[in-house]
Image 1: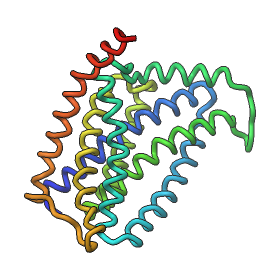
Image 2: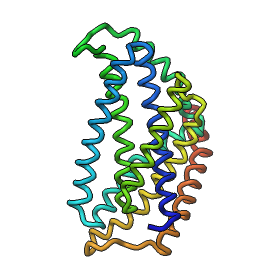
Image 3: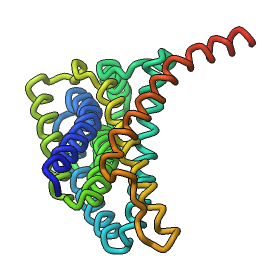
Length: 258
């Protein structure tokens, strides 16, 4: 694997995982400070165990059962699904049609819900704090798992992708311990925009290569190979900026017409 490809894999996985872990941290902090750290950390630990098992099963299944072209198609489609979701939200936020994601506000809402919830204990734990922490970490973690598996399998280096995501998690956890509050200073919306572009770019690249499974089973080749990636990235960036400019005008016309 080329040196530049390794660093590209590390950077893309780290940034994507970092954003997801920041959102998970907000939920765990809210539960820990309002419902108790024992339950919040127990829920977090249970979610991490579940994610480890989920990663092993899904990663083994994809790597073992699918030929390379089919794997590329599956990986590409998964990345496009995640990437276009992130990119859509980033475009709407940049265009002023959707509120910017605010970790402080998210923390406030989670805290209010925690304080309003009734008291219920199971296995010596506050059940609300445990379940919400488990759900938050697991759901955010599933996206990280898919990103790690898809990037890692296609690049032929799952351990590097997993290590990069692990480092991102440790960085977020350490920052959360030091700050003891949501990481609202992190430019999360900008990072999500960048990650959305990256995921859409790689998703497009690998989906097209994987279409070879429909024509003889061999992967298709992009003109120029990996050099097509910057071109695809530029295409998604230009398209997104056009939409940022056009969508507010379309929305304004719809309001006038109504």
